[in-house]
Image 1 (cartoon, rainbow, N blue to C red):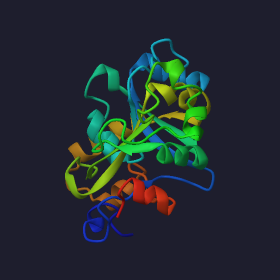
Image 2 (image 1 turned 30 degrees about the horizontal axis):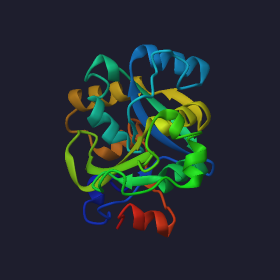
Image 3 (image 1 turned 180 degrees about the vertical axis):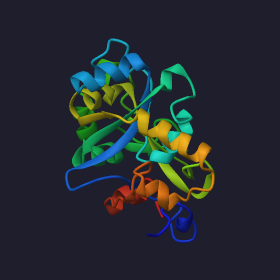
Image 4 (image 1 turned 90 degrees about the vertical axis):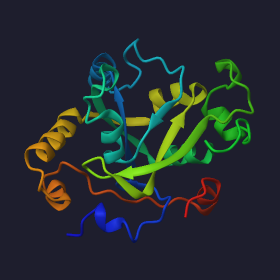
Length: 225
């Protein structure tokens, strides 16, 4: 089995979406407090807890290893103590990408389309100017299971308050707590520093993420290679 991380160094485009997905859904990750995560898993609604307040940009990541880096394997702080795997239907994930502007673009450089306006219920109701993008995308250096910086980029998708309620309430079809898996990965690497990425993959501690193809217009808008 080819090494799923280091072997990509020479073959992976700089900006490419890689994810765990099947015919119907794609998995993205985000870390939350224990209060938010427990209610979300129990009720299968991300906004089940009153502690969930989508008033700020919410950033989701298709990359498992980037989630590990961002949350410190769930040990970084109490607000990232639980890592959730969130499954979305492909059409909703693509809707996010189609509504997105790159963070390097000036604020308001991309107008909200009618589709994204409708999906957000009402930008005006959320007290955001219609010229502000409801979704942001940024490309950060990808990470290995050991959190080492790799030469290619990983996508982060920021969902603004204009769309967060719709996303949290209707666009997530399954919620799984994967905190134990994250901590098992950290423990395995710490206790067995010579372990290979292939073995981590075989143990199920890292997922087999594949290139996620998107339409040409999305590639162009997000400046993908």
